[in-house]
Length: 301
Image (cartoon, helix red, strand yellow):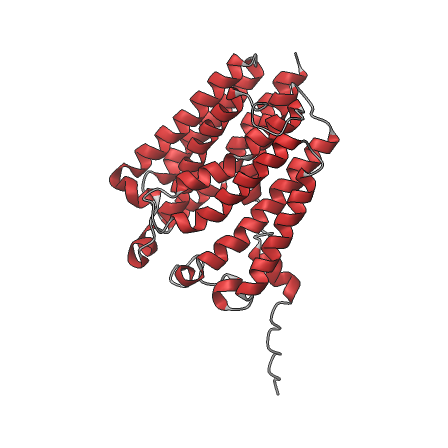
């Protein structure tokens, strides 16, 4: 005589919250972390100290997690129609909208408390950074390429890293050099590249439900557009780095990143879902290559 197996227990609240903030998918916060740390090392002309390293590492993880909460609340009615996102906790109702917003607010507050340990220009920059992060989920309803808004949101750690490392004490943005804004622009192109790969995965579903994306806007030029975005990102980042005195190890990191971009072309050229998603998830290694080259170059001067 056989006995029926017990029904699977529903996940607890902690497990649901960890699922909501994508704790099991670190690639998301690594995409934010590497360019932020690269900028921090460049601004500090080497190791920035444990305090700033902790602030920007923890702050990146916290804000990415808060962004996931906001995004899932904003997209809950769309996500149920997309295979990849249909089982997200807010979409299924396992986590309420009130819970998700409360968790997101708590995480954003913790991040802001970290920022308060830095200096006035960095604190000032945290406000537009938060505003852009909140605006992104709604941009896909009105903009043809909402990934541009995401690019700004994902790049704001760069001027914040410069302002914190340079240590200005005046309430204003004059202490953030032009190079930081150029690196922000460069990183925006990288975000356009990898998030268009991401959007290629959901293109068919997005067309059905009316969500806009760069993959839809670029149409048959999606692959060419992605490769152009990679070229603009790496070319501009290299130009700024050379202007600031970085040398051969920095360029070696850029070269390794460029090699990865070429590999991504082999994955996305057929526009198949799984290879495109694989390319997106591997992008943090491209950012790590640039970071590693930067750290080596500054350490071996």
